Length: 127
Image (cartoon, rainbow, N blue to C red; front, side, top):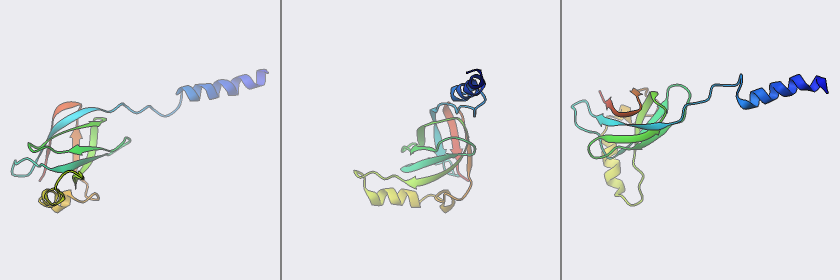
């Protein structure tokens, strides 16, 4: 019986998180605005955020005034845009707004970085 005590304690410790990988932070509300190089708001597209390190992707629509709100773990993100897929919306209008963006922001393989913090006040400025 004594021989099993040490291995069992090690397994219990690992299952409880002792010595295991660090737990990821919980996503929080992150909001801000997206603007074109000329300062005009980006709107009518889906903002997609992929963490530079560990974490889950996040994303959401960009409103007419360029504002966005997503649930994400604050940090460094690669970002790009997609057309909004809404079955109730005019598909050609959504595609038109998407195509109006510079092509480099439509491409998932181009690395544009944004640093986002919890709460509001974040700004993503296109170049």
